[in-house]
Length: 483
Image 1: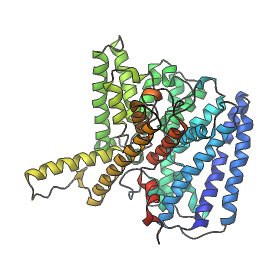
Image 2 (image 1 turned 45 degrees about the vertical axis):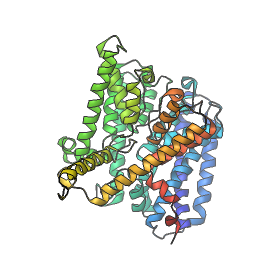
Image 3 (image 1 turned 135 degrees about the horizontal axis):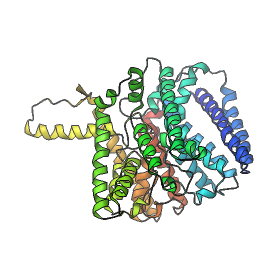
């Protein structure tokens, strides 16, 4: 391992992260919520830590190896989650312990949206803004931003991009240069955020709420500035805006790039993953609305439709916004939605879960095996968009599924051992591993009642899910550390 190179990158990114505390300081001073001291002290602490990491390695120039990229990615998410917890620890409100602050900051950066906070409406506005900003920064990945600026600092970024980008097709680049790719992604991400914020404002939100919810919507994070989440606003217009931008954020950003570049909406309609994504969501919406109507959960059909649409899109895309307490709906619906969060959004999006493309490939592989039972000698290729999928990609998907199931089972058993009941443990592990947020049972509102051991386990699950298992679990392999 090239320790100096890793320390240099880590130091630079910690310093850059310290700069992101300036907006919360400005918000605190503007609204005079008396929380600016915590952010100022945190900025100084984080800046000092970053400088200490960077200074000894400041002259290091060698290119990093591919393996170093994996270690850097994991270290960045772990270290920045720890750094991000400092303002929450120093703030007078809320008064958090170390475990709680780390859980909240990790949930923000990984865009999980699980929270241990209660009485959110009473917190300082700067603290509320800070939580939303964490999700926005984590949404597209702080590492992608780093890839855009690293070449200017004399450090290569291809290894980081390959390790960080979600989905099995990691070798596909939008532009020949990795720096331009990262910049293109951030331009699209920023553009969607601005459009989303403006839409929220014209739909009836205040400027503060519009900006805050735009951050968490485009990041598919789910944090809100209100205890009741989107349900606080009681507005169908706001629900419509949230639904639209959650759907857009759950699509592969490569499609957004292509659609913008070639000015063709048909790009979305031709992509097999996007079609499966929209098809799955439409199917679940129909099932949910029918169940809500049949059980007369709401008196008006329009309410069943609106609540069904918003909640399905929110949960299936792993955003985690709530318009109502969906955990009290007929049991079939919340269990179905929580399970479907496993699919998540498209590869290359800000969504969590296994990604639609993996589910699609698993389905096609299963269909091929059934066909081969009838025609054992037939050569039946798996195709996506009319193009055959290489066997190594299919094998990687099966490997991912096996690791996912194994990791899920271990985490579930540990959560049960902490004393959580089956419903709570099942939904908490599913929600955190898929970066969803809200669960069922004791975690339907927040995670405050979970034990410290349980919170540590779920914090690990968030990072594991955000890095899509392989990037983190490879560090536990002896082969990784040899040579």
